[in-house]
Length: 221
Image 1: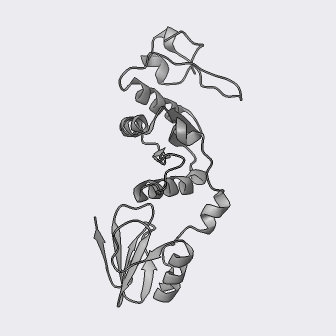
Image 2: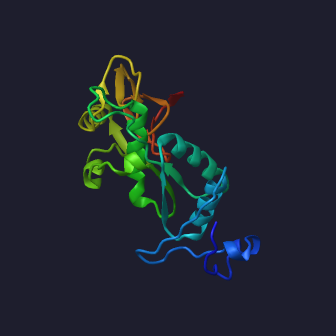
Image 3: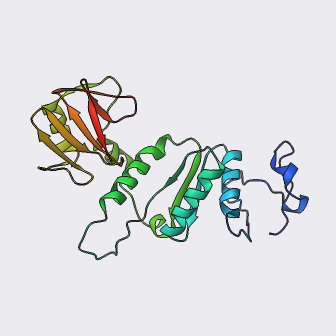
């Protein structure tokens, strides 16, 4: 790693790094820092340190999705800041099939949270960085959002699910599906990893942003 200019005098980093390795973070457009020879988990440690020092979000460009997932796990060990992946579609331009439902769910969750992300790390594979994403207004206009204490009838919820692109099926098997069974409504939301079973006709949302009923709810992995 080449030598850099002096670090902030009050930073903890200066007490543990040799003088020739200290550096300041870019503060203006066009400023660059080149950090090399980061072997093993050194890259994750450095990115976590930058995320702690920087007052805004940090974007980390990974060579591919495999490295993005590895960096996500490693960086999460070194910082309490939010760490998110914007997953690659993992499909070729002319493939006749859609991306996996888990990938779609992960991307929607990340894109929805980005506008409110004050600090943290966003990890993006280089192929994903080259692709366009839907406008933020479109995403929010078609997202299924529930607030704590909000009450919905089953018919109103079904209408909202249909307009948001959810599919009504006999048995829920994957993201984006829901099924009705009498007073029960099974829902597999985008952005979550478990099935939600809603009971009773009048339902109420919880603080976690997932739906539950006024009576009870069952979660299935």
